[in-house]
Image (cartoon, rainbow, N blue to C red):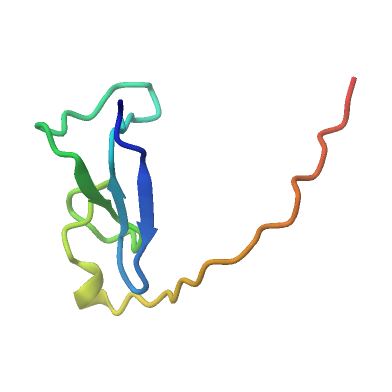
Length: 80
């Protein structure tokens, strides 16, 4: 059985992804993760290794407090 994917939104930092996942670029090409089952994705936009976090958020003053909340129901898309 595959490990369920878990994404942890770190306040003032990255998105930590763990489990059985694949990361692709916009063209559908798969990033080689060298067997990693856990990685951090950049949220600050300043990483030199995008989309992966390299810790730059600690030096650029990135601040974003994250607390879990419920989203409203999705808005239905208009039909034909």
